[in-house]
Amino acid sequence: MSATNKNKSGREWREVLFEVIFEADTPAGKWFDIVLIITILLSVMTVMLDSVSGIREKHGQLLSSAEWFFTILFTIEYILRLLCVGRPVRYAVSFFGIVDLLAILPTYMSLLLPSSRYLAVVRVLRVLRIFRVLKLGHHTKEAAMLRKALYASRRKILVFLFAVLTLVVIIGSLIYVIEAQKGDFTSIPRSVYWAVVTLTTVGYGDISPQTAPGQFLAAIVMILGYSIIAVPTGIVTAELSVAHKGQSNTQACPDCSAEGHDSDARYCKFCGAKL
Image (cartoon, rainbow, N blue to C red; front, side, top):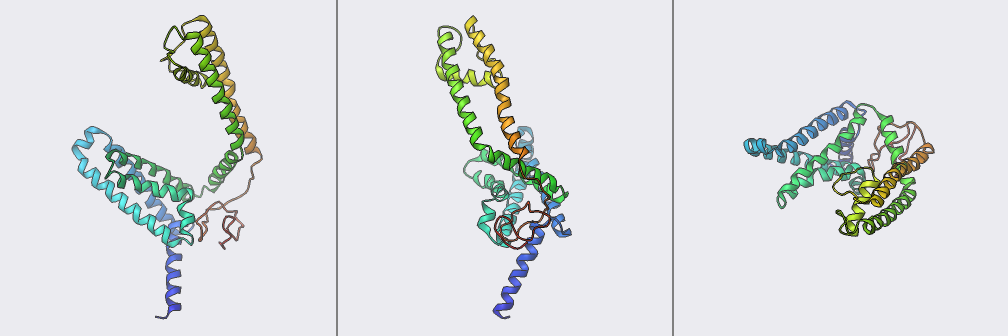
């Protein structure tokens, strides 16, 4: 076989593999995703059952073997994804690429840190591919819009978080001065912890002011907490209102594996490769 035919054969092999693994518009791709999702759910169930002491004592060996089986299976799948995509590094650092890697690392890490195997439940994030299988492209687009809105409002949110951090330090210091000789406010860090819990309206109740001035300050912080919660919501909502809206499909770029392209797109909007 000539070098040209070998190169052609290699391209065809990668194209077929890419179509099966990354595309959900073909029967083979759809069945691959369905089987993959079922396998992911079974693997997550295995990890969860292994965390139950009674079940682990009776079926620990079986669950361990099943976990290694799923891990090896996902490892092979991850390698195949890197082999068939045009830009392996681009896929490896993408959202799903990182999730796919995190899905197999905990089991290997358990050889050194046994308890780390329970982190394999992160595999449940891979079930997000069900949006592609069920043709829920508009949900994928909405998720992209939300991500875009969060990214666009990142500076405002950071400023807001810094302002809240400053506020809880001041409130914590103030309640410490008021309650220093009474109750459980034994230090400023502990008082700041109370301020965070109270301002976020969580209210564990493990620390509470005992004096009238301290209770008055607590009431003000509680009321302030409700108004503060609404601020980041308003920031993100404002960015969502100006986010771009359009139709998208489930087609993945054969070069960088990115999704979320417009229905009439002919080229990838992320890397410029032809779709």
